[in-house]
Amino acid sequence: METTMKRGFTMAEACQYLGGVSRPTMYRLLGGGELSSYHIGVRVYFTKESLDKFINERVGLWPEVDGTITHDLAGGDSEYLK
Image (tube, rainbow, N blue to C red; front, top):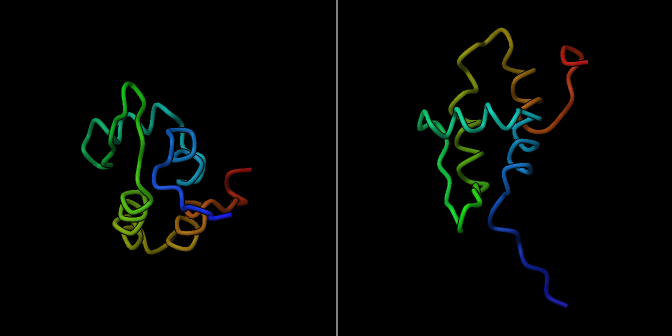
């Protein structure tokens, strides 16, 4: 059986991948041009590359919290969010 790599993240999967951000936040990021997406019908999808680019562009903006940001955006949990 051949396994194929998933090419697109749904809105819910993208929210989770970015550390559990909300759907309204995702739509705000889309509207502001900070994230790229594609549509199939009315559904919105994101590529892993576009989500990784978004993460990488933000790392380094706040050196005092970089470790926390990197960990949270990569899907980890944070003591600050509990």
